[in-house]
Structures are given as C-alpha cells and as structure tokens.
Image (cartoon, rainbow, N blue to C red; front, side, top):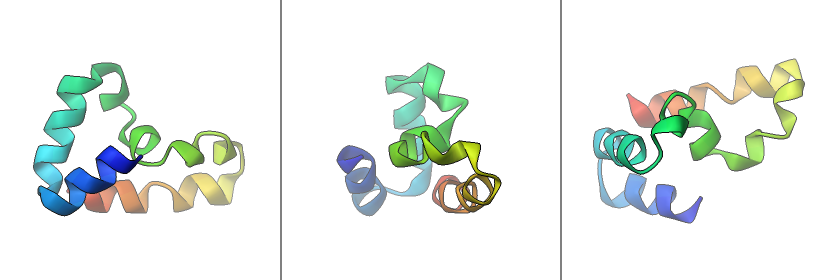
Length: 61
C-alpha cells in the first residue's frame, strides 16, 4: 500500500505499472488489487467494484 503510493507520488504512473509487473507479475493482471488491497474484500458489492476501477485506471494511464 505505502510503497505503491510513494512510487505514484515520486515516479510517474507508467514506471509504477512496470515496477508492479516486474515485482508481482501475477498481480499485473489485477492492478486494482495491488493499488487497493482494501478493495479485495468488498468486490462482492457491485457499487464497490464499479467505483474501484476508476482510481487504478487513472494511475496506470
């Protein structure tokens, strides 16, 4: 959590994605899971799932 946020602030969103892909390739397919670990439990609720994609997408892109 903290590492990702620190990288996002210090580095651009692109390096963050590459770093995640190299560090955790299995999580690369699920960037939102890495970006927001707290979102993992609530994904069952439709509103939470729809609200989750926007933040990670903005950081990645």
